[in-house]
Length: 358
Image (cartoon, rainbow, N blue to C red; front, side):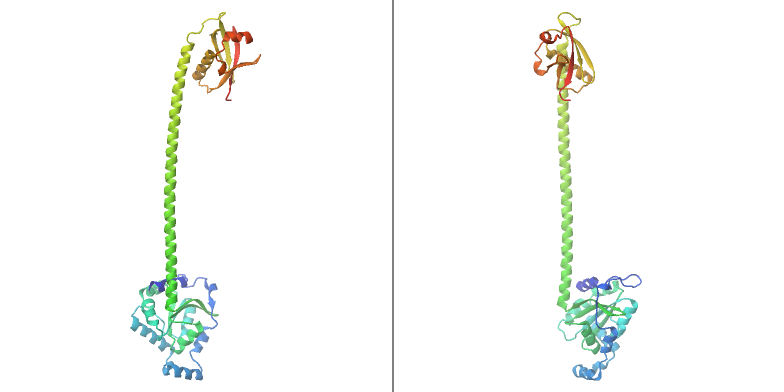
């Protein structure tokens, strides 16, 4: 089943190409028993052997190699050729071989009398998924033992097998065996695999949700940018239209002002006033006006001069330096002749054009 392969992949660190193990054994739990101690337990004293024979019969006299081979052949005969390639060697030799080759040792303890053994072997152990796992991980050796045999029973005591079926991944070191992980009972193993699948499904859904939010945020950002660009285009178009209308209106107003200036005096006389108008940058404007002209006519002349010279002054007032006097837009009705009484703007005078926005 996929659960077995998935569970095993979580427990086996990848070895390098030469078969050496990654440096992850610092997290492993050491067993109190060494391989030699476990192997020695397979050959109990005379009193224990008598007790074993009383419980299990004379089959305990078979060699560890014969018992390992018999269990493997029994599993293959019962569940097919997809069973893992268990080694036909004593447990001590299996641990020594794993230590020598720098590989993990996956231990399966089989209980023929346990009610879950058959289902576990059929649906989990002897499957294509486990075969694929074994083919993909050449840094793992497989050993199986029956708890009804002396060696398998001794190994179960040493590994602390509390329920069956029992799987244990160990790492054999000069100091003894380090347990990488162990799975006891079909239910707990399946539950762990289910939790792994649920975790993977949750992570996948979270990834999909993150991608969906990213797409939505990108679409929203693009929509906002397009709307901003559209609003900017509308605003620029409106500003351009307003500028064209203002320019057209100003040009039309200038034509009217030019027409009002068309009948001005040509030569100086008692009924004329010659004005010099000086801007803030030193530019000077000169014109001969009728003494009866108002400051409105003078402002028409200044506006036309600003338009022709492209001078960007809109709000201004006319003023004398001494004595100080100013004529703004609201004094446009005052005639130059009336202004003579106070300032003598005829026959000639100097006025300053003061920009009110500068």
